[in-house]
Length: 290
Ligand SMILES: Cc1cc2nc3c(=O)[nH]c(=O)nc-3n(C[C@H](O)[C@H](O)[C@H](O)COP(=O)(O)OP(=O)(O)OC[C@H]3O[C@@H](n4cnc5c(N)ncnc54)[C@H](O)[C@@H]3O)c2cc1C
Image 1 (cartoon, rainbow, N blue to C red):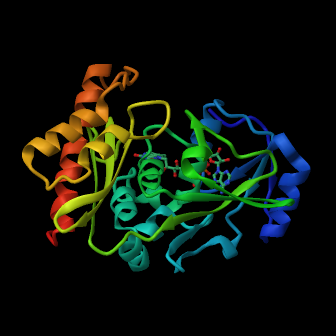
Image 2 (image 1 turned 90 degrees about the horizontal axis):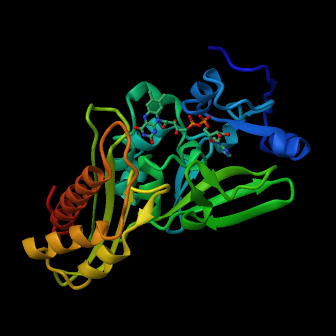
């Protein structure tokens, strides 16, 4: 199928893009990498009347570390994040997560901010960003606001972005020295969307967990923080029993929807295994392992 007719706007500066979006209000839709939006349009599941293409906004093509934060601009491709040495040093969890998104051709085009704005509950990047306590910078003609990612994503494919706004940047606090991280997921075929995945960040102090962040994708209508697991990990040294207890706590109370990839109990089981694997690897990395 082909998309329904639409008007196409190609601004060459951010101020111009914001002016166009301001004028269009509810009618305006940002086009970034097009890896989610274009298929939806081709199936007529999305029928925007005005597309605002941000691919000429070179000023938003950056990944940089600045004052304890890794900032990723709206034009930065997922493949740029994957290759960025700066990102690998500042937020290795995010780099591990992005490598598991789709296939290289999709990552060459798809953007980090586009994945966040799209808010697919099964997507890797929003879950990793949730574990990392990232912030979303929303820009409009009226100014900017910073939104914690847990307030930005409000439901399946739904965010708190207002008409006239675009996601200009995602800001990720730099992970502390001595922290351990891992992103583990399971998908039936390499490159497919994951049945479920887990993002884990551990901060150890004298061999014990001082702070734990655990976030899951694919188990609810949006990425979720596993507060029970985080609590259970506090003070843990990484024994088998502690890992099992944390993994069980992570999925307690979750009732994932069934779909053609599996039932609710199956998804829960997969999530539990992913959490356990990710915690195990995060411990090993925090202690200086690979
Ligand atoms: C074959 C295939 C496999 C895939 N597999 C995976 C996978 O395993 N995991 C995964 O997470 N994703 C997967 N994707 C999706 C891919 O990661 C997309 O790149 C991503 O979800 C959206 O990024 P984009 O830049 O392409 O956004 P677009 O498709 O351009 O836009 C998506 C939505 O976000 C909005 N948007 C984009 N950028 C902004 C912005 N800066 N401000 C405001 N709104 C914005 C658009 O208006 C639109 O509503 C897959 C895609 C394909 C085609």
